[in-house]
Image 1: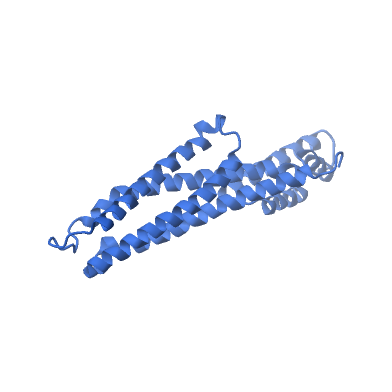
Image 2 (image 1 turned 120 degrees about the horizontal axis):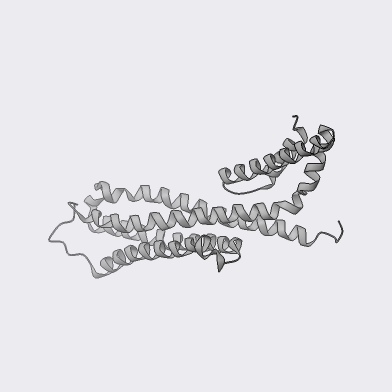
Length: 234
């Protein structure tokens, strides 16, 4: 059957949504399939193809009506993805950190300053604490969703919290790196310590994910406000 009207509606829905592309595409595909099924049922009942599609689209709802729910699902998906990334990456960093001290260019007779040791230890524990907190937040998107009713608000909190944490964690990691090089200039050529540059790439990606948490949650709130401002009976 021809699906020009339905395809146009689906394309408009995709353009109105913000969030993880694969999840968005799945949602739009499900909506398209539902519309096609409804239109086929109306055709079987005697309507023309064009009328069947128009009726199916009209009953499915306007963008203003359906976008908030779809956008909420996308926001939650983004929040869950970001929390999972942090929950996996930070404990991994904590477990790999001791490798930096093995067979490295650290002179045995050169004692480490107390301040350096405290900062390095704090950085490691900060990584572990951040990963554990992300794991707890991840439960809020799954099993704990029965208690955390507003997943969009949780996603918004994940965005702000992750950006703040990444800023503090990144500064601490940068100071540890520069302090290491200042104490042991040969460390700049030590591959495992130099791998800190790769960590900055991972930090940048995590920051992008956190920013998307804010963008998707704000998009949902904006769509919800448009409904609340809609005149009664409109």
